[in-house]
Length: 334
Image 1 (cartoon, rainbow, N blue to C red):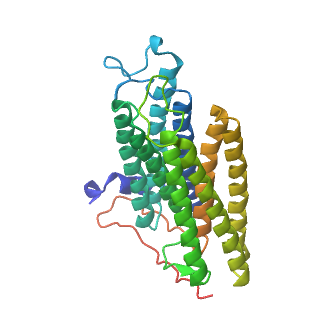
Image 2: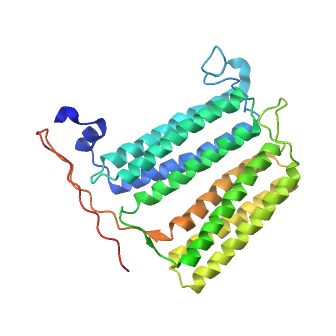
Image 3: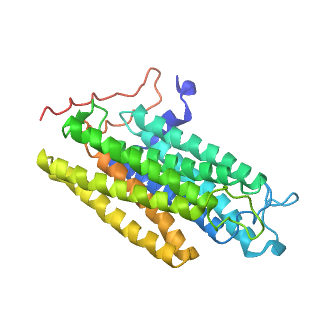
């Protein structure tokens, strides 16, 4: 019955987004996830973490920053507003994935996962403010942003492939080495959050609690893991070459190596120039690129059946109308 249609089905009856549109919508959420990380870093590096001193309002009596809060209030409030912009991008992705025929519920589920991560991180951001920039909660705030970037990358990959059973493109030992690389990179990012929590950029000009560790010693541990990740990357490249893996898989490893080397240079520059804010901000952007490059290495090692051609949307409001779902083609046995 027409009255039983949910809003997504109504949209699907009137709009059939192309596969290219869904893919671009997924890529847009990746870009916005990076923007959120970089702007969050800008809040901390400009000492605007408490520019709005409460949450969800900016002050106890005002939703927006007041004139006497200065530029710090504007920066913090702008970062909060970007959460709503991100929600719009995620919403477009969910609607496009749901409206396309045949329905790909794997994409819509991943889109909703992004939405709930954004909502959860907004709450954590509020707790960060209410606890006066507690460094442990600040770290969890960044890690949730990294989780959002991870899901966004998976959605982007899934938008370019079908829903058939995945097929490995390289030998199992090489995939195991890849997972070791992913784990080492994750450890590198975790240690980086500890460096942030113990380091000099607390996020506000007032005295803020810091993680009670020597940040220079933690930085050295961070550097050690950089070398571990570099070593694993080189080892993976030689392994893929030895097993004659496809050129596309080897290319993602080379791209990762280039990003790691550039990030390493930036890291040394910020350390020996005593952590200038601009260079630290570039390093945060680089950390996003490193994680994206690692995920590209992992995601490139499997494939699924190609997307089927979109079926025409049902027309008319006759009782009993329903979507025609085209079967997925079988995965290639090449």
